[in-house]
Length: 264
Length: 264
Image (cartoon, rainbow over all chains, first blue to last red; front, side):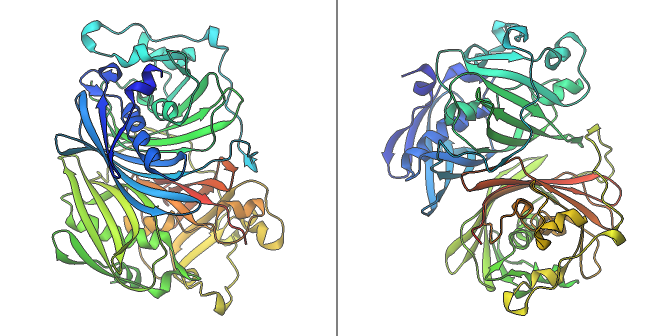
């Protein structure tokens, strides 16, 4: 079992309750990464579902949890032949932290696309991409050690005071430990990039309000490519879309989140 | 009060319960339009919220309701200064029809975009656009009479056996009766286009599994422009994105739905 699999385990208590333990290794300062929380929650949902894959997940981020014990509470809403729908809540100290609606289904790994849009705009080769500088120890950015992110160099222009001037962030992604990507790794990946508004010169914690992501195919082994973009920054709100492509050049996931621009 | 406002009324029973009446005028055959159901539900959510606007709505479509009485049941999850979060369920005969997570906030009508993407690709002038043919009476497509949709001509190529070969659907939209667009009209608009996969030659009922839409600004009076597109059709699933632009050329809403390709 990899460290990521261990950190996202969900232990069945009864039909609709799972015990989990939120791992201090996925922190962004005082908070835990939203994609990590989704991965933990989805372990419980798929374990209880007749279907294998979380094809659609919508999440409202209600509160910032602390590390340690928490529960996933499930409310099955519909179980059909093609798909099952479940409401799932991550609860800590009796209070909801993350409220989600999840659709599970069983994707055919061999299905060929009937239609697919333009392939990912090419990033430079991995060896020409750049990494984030090591975080200051007091920042408690433990998440950074868990992920291997290699950025298209302009996507980190904001670090040298040269933001590219449009909400864009592009990088290769894999776990730092050796592990093939799966739907839970993708849940982490869709919320792994720094906020796209950093490329507009914004800084500081940009809290996600709502995030919806769809699993469109099962990923091939190897690097994932994350393409982050946005359409509108207005009135303190911004949207962030992330497309996840696998090493075989296939679109495997789509996400969009609505978030607040940070004031840092 | 317009007919649309009347058909989407929600009457407060108690703090967390609203009575509604699903109107037979928004039917697509045996089903009711999903955007109409969202509009009804959002009336209840915003009535009960300290905030004015439904900025983010995620919905799972569980069952097909019938016309007539139904209830909206609310579960307040968080009430903050910037935003409130509510779980809202449309219930009929004791069974959930539509399960949603809604974030309400109060948008500033005068906020200027900090950044905005490319404006909508221009449609031809309204007078050069085309309408759907009148539906057969036995099809019970009563929704068509409620909406004034004027399509970019290639978007209806599938009607003459000439689908354009990519999942795209573009049209001007307004209610048939005179009414300025508001967030509830936009809820209808984001699910108003024929399925984008019709432009790939698919036909038949394409059930929405999940739909998330974000209200990004309050619309100016006049026509809305709906730009529908998709990224991937695979394994019986397709995504459909709709951008809603107002008559002042501003992006006012973004939606994405995950749906099943019809077998018609």
